[in-house]
Amino acid sequence: MESSLHKKQHLKPKRKSIMKQKWLYFMMLLPLTSLIIWNYIPMYGIIISFKDYSPAFGIMDSPWVGFAHFERFFNAFYFWDVIINTLRISLYSLLVGIPLPIILALMFNELRSKKYKSLTQTISYIPNFISIVIVVGMVTFFTSPVDGVINTVIEYFGGTPIDFIGSAKLFPHVFVWSGIWQTVGWGTLIYTAAMSGIPQDQYEAAYLEGATRMQCIRHITIPAIMPTIVICAILATGSVMSVGFEKVLLMQNDANLATSEVLSTYMYKSGILNAEYSFSAAVGLFNNLINFIVLYLVNKFAQKFSETSLW
Amino acid sequence: MQFHLSREDKIFNWINIVVVGIITLLILYPLLFVVFASLSDPRQIFDNALLLWPRGFTLEGYKRVFDNPDIWMGFKNAVIYTVLGTAVNVIMTTLAAYPLSRRDFRGRNVITILFTFTMFFSGGLIPTYLVNQHLGIINTMWVMILPGAVSVYNMIIMRTYFQQNIPLELEESAFIDGATDMQLLLKVVLPLSTPIIAVMMMFYGVGRWNGYFDAMIYLSDRELFPLQLILREILVQNQMGDAANQAMMNSNQSEVNMIKQSIKYAVVVVSSIPVLIFYPIVSKYFEKGIMIGAIKG
Image (cartoon, rainbow over all chains, first blue to last red; front, top):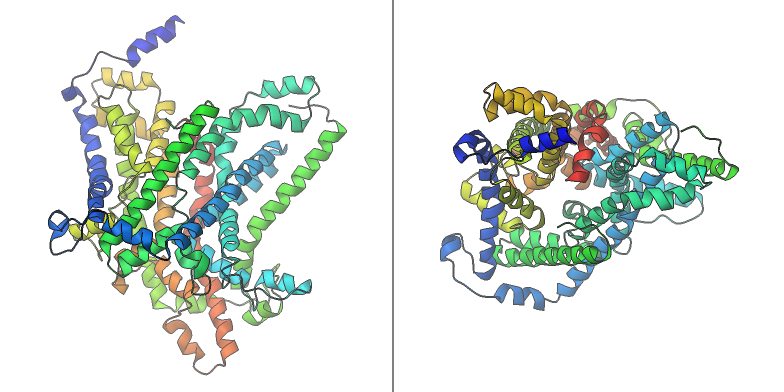
């Protein structure tokens, strides 16, 4: 007790003057500069979504147009299509992508052989380190209607080959499940770490009282990792409108455009390819605001119904 | 924990072992398939789509990949961007994480909020593009190296690692010896932080190596393209450049397709080699180093 008190006093020393900490401020200088240039100045740049930005005038002197760009976007005939496509893919991803890593982590945790556990875990992490371009390339290898493995299996069982990539109906499935293949293993890591903090004697006590493994999972493991689950879920829903944009762009083709055109690909096309900077910035702001609002609401909800929340 | 298992628990155990095994195989097989296919005669892949080992062993695909000047160029560019970019990332992240890990650092809370806010709200694609345009770094190698120097998520992981793994007593005794904060960081903190630095290098390095999007929107000069953009042409857009063409002059269409296919398999393997070399070195740190940080963060 006494020694911990002693430590506390050292922990919070008398207020140090700024000059005494000059090296710490000096260290912060570069990272803060970078943060301002690439994170905060772009936030200031958002005002072009209320202007008619032209490079000749610059951000300051371009004329104000109020909400014109937003009105144009909301009234566009593709508006609801794009929103629905975005929500379909992201809700589907969340629905599958949140629980599966938890389940897999629970299964890893129940493995009794250390060797087998670390082997299977290490293998499951690998796809996370493969680039999106390669993953999309592999999806095309495997789903090819001509010589892809999946279609070979389908044909073997007497089905007809399916063009997975060229189908608007199948696009969300291909997108989400190839994403699960890539990230499910890595997603377990954070839960595995949380489980490693559970005291073993809890399990021993439960065992002595005759609890089965399933009961231990339900009454010890899951409650213990609940805070981690809540935090991960909040963070995941906070990017509900963003979708795996870089991957969608790679998987998109004329045949699946009906379901693969999402907010961010649309923004990219109008902004970068057609150089409609202001309009595209407006779409981006809309996207960001929705994300932020969803994050806020989900966090509020979490505060109310569980003990854990982001802030 | 060594208990006598009940029958129910034994069944549970076996089912669990088998299901985890199946899932692991499902994750592993696509990777193995690509490696086997890259070493196989393309005609054999066509006939037996389910490869369990290389069939009709050949290095033809690799030969064509290495004959392709675009791939060499992309590889060289990707190495440059990855090495320099990762160095910038790790240095900047350390410089931000260390002061923020110090409980006595005045302004700590405000600066932490400044950083974390950017996790939840950003200017977006177009305003960021305009900033880079304004800086005049578009279509130069700098746009691949300077932006995004600090990932806030990584910074929080590193900060928490410092807080939990550097004994306060060490810092205090260094102070008593008259060390400055900078000397403290370089001589006391960093030598104790190898695991987290290795993990950060892996995270940032893989991100740099694997990214294609920034290169796609910011680079128009082909000489500057990193490997992933070349891969995108080959794998996604099905454009092979010269390498395939010479060989295809006097072949029929299905022959051409098979050659293209074997080039694709080989290029996937070649481009993944750098990551797969580093992976085993760093993977042992994953659970120890990072996740402790992530949870508390």
